[in-house]
Amino acid sequence: MTRNMLILSVAAASLAVAGCAKKAPATLPPEPVGTYDDTGTGDGVITNAPVPGSQADFLARVSSDTVYFDTDRFDIDGEDRVILQSQAEWLRQYPNVRLTVEGHADERGTRDYNIALGERRANAAKNYLATLGVDPSRISVVSYGKERPVALGSNESAWAQNRRAVTVTVN
Amino acid sequence: MSLRSLLLFAVAVASLPASIQAQELPPAPSSPPPQQTPRETVTGSIGNERSVIAVPALATPQAMSTAAGDTATLGRQIGDVIASDLDRSGLYRPLGPGSVRAITFAEVTAPQLPYWRGSSSAEMLVQGFVRADNAGNLTVGCYLYDVALGTELVRQGYVVQPADWRRAAHKCADAIYSRLSGEAPFFDSRVAYIAESGPKGNRRKQLAIMDSDGANHRFITNGQSLALTPRYSPDYKSIVYVSYLGSRARVYVYDVGTGQQDLVTESTNPTFAPRWSPDGRFILFSMAVAGNTDIYRIAREGGSPRKLTTSPGIDVGGSYSPDGSKIVFESDRSGGQQLYIMNADGSDQRRISFGGGRYATPEWSPRGDLIAFTKIAGNFRIGVMRPDGRGEKLLTDSWQDEAPSWSPNGRILQFFRTSQGASGRSTLWQVDLTGVNERRLPTPGGIDGSDPSWGPVRP
Image 1: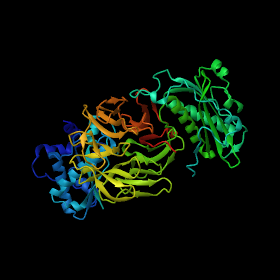
Image 2: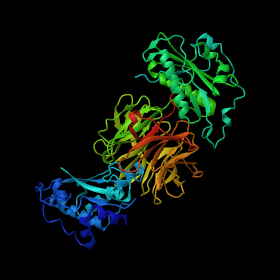
Image 3: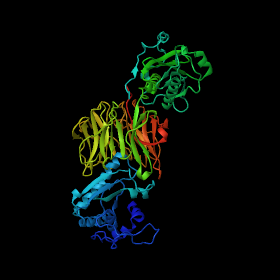
Image 4: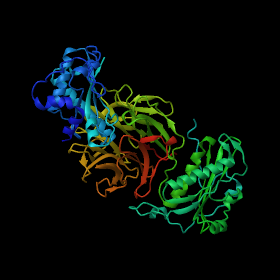
């Protein structure tokens, strides 16, 4: 339920993919290589194409760098799988790129526990990437607990955005 | 920096002036023995019935300049600190140097009781003196009189270096508090905490230390790496805490004297939630291995950690009973976070919390009688229960109160309160066991704070 609200507000683009292709192999990365302006201030102008294999390239070509979790949960569901499959696809093309998965929790847990919970989430994402063939030795994990929220409100929508595991490439 | 310069005198002090030694009144026989304080209720009164204590500026036999200012000024400042301490206890209503007349040096041991009876509502009277000697030390005398009975209840003296004058004030307040309440002292103690600043999404979190009243504040880390969950060692020589130095969570043991810090253990796995054993010989920490967090114990000097929990759930934190024989910790092995007790070697793990909601951050009282925790049931509240899990009582009621830390005497809890919304502000608070006397802890410049760790009374 909270998952749906989250998807609507944060990852509308990936919802379409996840919704109609739950079990299908990832309907792969958006064709146009390059980032397009989705801030609403421009009109989708193509900007400079990122350097292949860079973090910008990763962000441009995966369906999302972030998977989200329900309260106190750390399981990887269908929507998460689609996202992680797109990440794994990209990682197969750049086998020398290392990555860090950052696990996070919302503010409605205690500090120590949330560090442990973020560890669980980041490891869940790491383990799924490993099942997709990404060498686990390329993946490090760090939990920030509730210390680094992306959404600053104190409401369900903000908390849903903060319960996340974010894949970051390391060069 | 001189630390242990304070020498606590017994009742008769050789270096005190003859006029003071001559005053040898026995303790008032009518005052109740401390042991008669009822167990289940907190000492003192509730609401407005706090007893009034006059605290005039301490007198000086002769104004002399010292490294911390002249003795007359120090006398007033010490009186202010004593009054402030007594006020923070929540049990008394002090009338400090700003609201009562000054006394002469001769009055210190010859209180003008008719004056105090006639001109104030004070039931108790604190008097004292400040004297500088040729070696550059201060001698601070501390006396407590029962105004109505005319009896002397406290007589103590402390020799301190001038820079440590606040400690003499805290010792005096401690002696008065203990004598009147029957409780163990707690003012002369220190607090480690996390000073916070900046926007909610990227807070700067620095390890800092201060006296229990917010004075003598010092930042220990510069804030470039996230610092979390400090715990002062029982001897105040070290602080264990989590630092994200190198962009991962690891427990460090920081030496306050040398400024050096060492990893609690060498591991590629994250370590966090550190705690001291009561004797300071062991450190508990939590470590996540492939996402599964368990509690480990390691000797202060290092060596191999011993794993104390093995459940597939999150086992985290941990707080020793005062005798070191048991550990209360937090685990979600049954679903949500609950409190469990185990023997110090990890054996005999059993759940003690069964109320609705979740329970986190257990801390065993230094008296042994209670366990404090964060209760998560909608809001976060600070509560206590007995070690058998019974007698649960919630002490605060706010949106998010978290992470209690006991006063040295097990009568007051410090914690932090996070405000709702985008500001992300956090502040340090304390509450006594009645839940009535709740107040914000001062921090320098009103800087935000979290994770208070209250150390023991200093020797």
